[in-house]
Amino acid sequence: MNDTATVLGLFASLAVTLCAIVARFWPRPKTAGVWLQLYLLVNAVAQNGGHATNADDVKAGKS
Image (cartoon, rainbow, N blue to C red; front, side, top):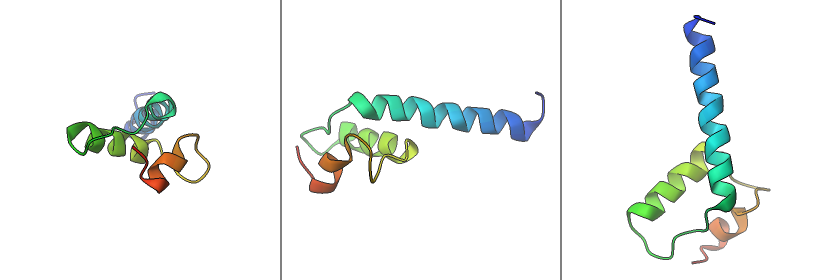
């Protein structure tokens, strides 16, 4: 488990998993600002698009 690629892969997998869990329960912020930018980053890392639970509010730009 000391292989660099293995460790980086595990951390990448952990980041995607955690962001997916957070994105599942985090509604889109109503105002543009730091929270919206963080929300968009979390959704990007979580690969939250297409058929994800809260993907509709991102596509529609709902507040």
